[in-house]
Length: 139
Image (cartoon, rainbow, N blue to C red; front, side, top):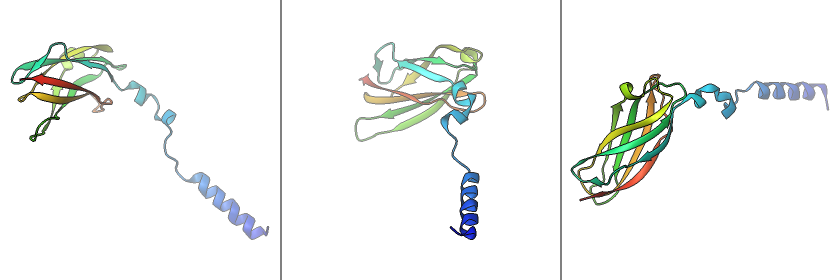
């Protein structure tokens, strides 16, 4: 191998080593571990169309900084499929708590099969991974 090729090879290897690499999961630091987690979502009583119901959300929040629940409701039946989304303020019930249970209202206009997706929002505007359940709403 000639000296020129050795220099070119060394430069190529040096530039490849200097290229930015994507962050590995362990490089994410404590941020990912500090995000709140939805542990379980349940419906304590049967749901009926046109009447208010409840969702029970069990959560863990290592930093105790949950301020809102993001709720997405999807209608899975019929020709009029719809999706609604809203944020529910839970500062008074969850902020400062590292674990607990939140009871949040839920309401469906029409009966049928529905998907409920919830996630937790922090005071730093970060969001937990979503958790979803499918429920049947009676007429």
